[in-house]
Image (cartoon, rainbow, N blue to C red; front, side, top):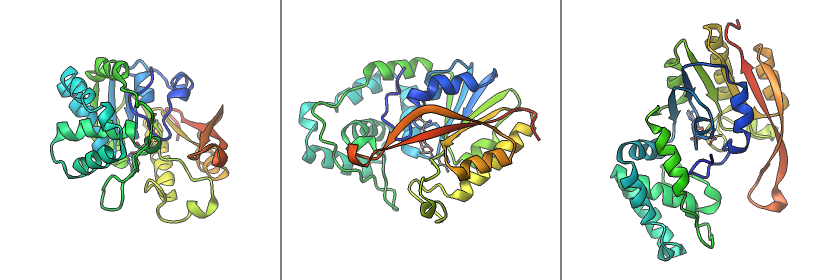
Amino acid sequence: MKPFLKWPGGKHRLSGLICSKLSAGRRLVEPFTGSGAVFLNSAFELYLLADSNPDLINLYQQLAKEGHTLIRYCQGLFLPENNSASAYYRLREEFNASPKPGRRAALFLYLNRHCYNGLMRYNSKRIFNTPFGRYLKPYFPEKELLFFLERADQASFLQADYRDTMELVEPGDVVYCDPPYDPLSETAKFTEYHAGGFSWKDQEQLALTARDIAGRGIQVVISNHNTPAIRRLYQGLGASIETLNVHRSIGPDAASRKKVEEVLAVFEQGMV
Ligand SMILES: C[S@@+](CC[C@H](N)C(=O)[O-])C[C@H]1O[C@@H](n2cnc3c(N)ncnc32)[C@H](O)[C@@H]1O
């Protein structure tokens, strides 16, 4: 099943392959949940779904709590009169000012489906600033929301940095990490921060933590771009690497799209 959110780097198309690499366990921990494609397409008994984006986790928590009432309420925003630049910018402004969790959750879903390319982008003051998307008729993902809701009682939702989520991993868990991608250009890699605020140091720290957790008997699987630096990093720490034979398009328009490969690094339980 497709996630109800559009999410850059979403793993819907790769979820079958990713799930086939996950070992059996009671609970799946996802420190970078995003749209939850792996959660929605796997069959663990329990899930710990975390992400650093507070609006994303608020939406999941509100949906789990309010259920069908929130779905109906969200649907009320998907009206033809709200599909114009002026309505979009008014609702975007309201979202940025709103302290109410339920209203904020509904507006987040509205923005996700009406903004440019589903890009959930914030400025340094955490103001959501993606422009209007100009879609003919934005899709209201009702069946996807209902599917998510059916499974939500198996999950705990947590707004957290991945370092804190990794501390909560316990024996019997399996961990799937899908961090922001290592950038394809070398210059971007060595700047302290790049789009998404995830630096090369973070990539290294995540890989080291994965190796340590695997040493405690817990499997950790990590997705990333197939770059030489990423291969060196994961292989150097003893992970097995699989190049996924799936090409994903990146870039906003056909002209700037490049085909990129992805890797899946598996830190097997018991590794030292
Ligand atoms: C590539 S996306 C995950 C996509 C997800 N697997 C899916 O299928 O939609 C990366 C996610 O990491 C989150 N993120 C970025 N930095 C983070 C951090 N330091 N700790 C936890 N989550 C972070 C982002 O909010 C984003 O949702």
